[in-house]
Length: 182
Image 1 (tube, rainbow, N blue to C red):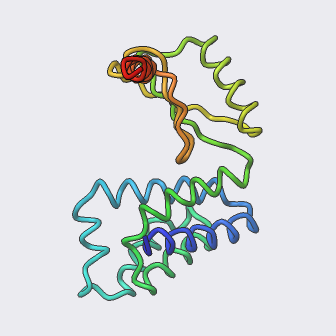
Image 2 (tube, rainbow, N blue to C red; image 1 turned 135 degrees about the vertical axis):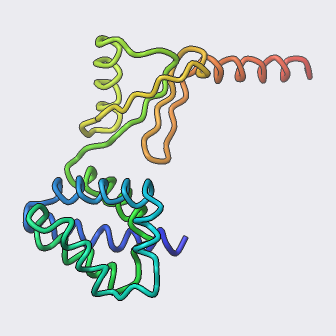
């Protein structure tokens, strides 16, 4: 819980700086790539979390990775994480920054889980409907899951719209159980 709060503070601070210098999308890409490397490479994660490695060495390593690519504000941000011994927050900061960045641009990402791939017409209709509800631009991230058994599930942050056949069958079963009690 405390880590999420800290990650949100760091992400919000980075967003403020990157909005000011016009590098939000770039920072988002680099931060998500860093998150993937951190989570996907045990040696890299171990190197960054090793307390015996001096902070200056960690900073130099991160600087070398991003120098010439990322803006100095991003590299300075990574240096701050090193100085504050908060490199373990990289995944949470990246996820939170992604959400905050989308919100600042008026975008909401919706994960759509369906039992088969959506057709272009279904995708367009769903996107238009969700944009009316959210009153923002909607970017769909599709996941094909045969266990959905028809229909679809939409996830936007912590909100879920369940239009799956499995959910509908469960609701019908509950109504039948209620009727049996009468």
